[in-house]
Amino acid sequence: MIREFSTGVRLLLRGFGLWRTRPGLMALGLIPAVIAVIVLAAVLVPLVLGTGSISTWLTPFADGWIEPWRGLLRGAVSLVLIAAGLALAGAVFTALTLTIGDPFYQRIWHAVERDLGDAPPADGGSFWTTVGEGLRLVLLGLLIAILVLVLGLVPLIGGFLGPVAGIVLSGRMLARELTGRAFDARDFSPADRAALFGGSRARVLGFGVATQLCFLVPGGAVAVMPAAVAGATMLARTMTERTPTPAPGSSPFVELRAPGSGPHEPPTGLR
Image (cartoon, rainbow, N blue to C red; front, side, top):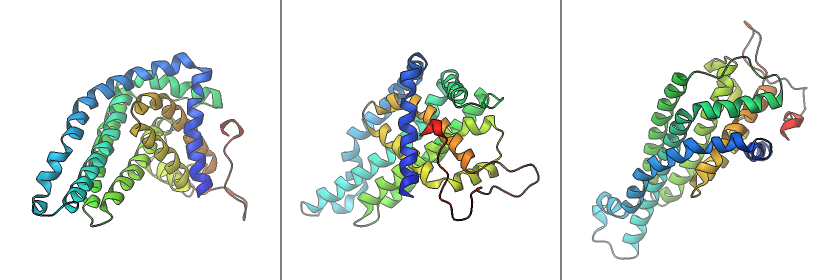
């Protein structure tokens, strides 16, 4: 599992390798990310500055507590509020960036597919497909933010459990969204995708968590988005290599491995 998780992280790092081979194309991918960050900053900055007041409003029962307990409680609530906001912001940023930058990211996706060989004939979905996926992503991000808030209220461990759950769930959601174009181009059904993700859980999680953590670094969301699109395309290819698509009318996905053998390695070009 650790090896698979680290493979997912390495695929994101390989996405950054496109800066060396196609710098102009990757630079174009920064433009929609910058626009999305400016829009989100107008919402996030007031939220961060106002977390102290919000946490005080949410915990009126602690007004009579002595320090440091009152401060510790409200500090933990503030941390959970920020974690929930970041979980939602990550989803909104991805949806907004992919929608604004659809032509740019389409070109990045095509470039990676061509470099890896056997590129699918389809174009990976229309603009309106991207819009629909973006709206779904925002709704999922909202649900994750609510869950983070609920977990954050768990006594003693909520201040740790909420942010960690937010990173893990947001990371998995981002990985699923960013691989969507490659799977749309291959006309995979929801059942096909579920089987693919089920066969590469740790790898998908490693890629998604690494991407989400990069989003949390100031300026990281802008820098990482083009690389995340490229890395997600590589991730999708390794997932289909590990869990080949079944022939029409056959049984669901099965991982084709010799009995007793270990997990398949990624194709040589992706190591």
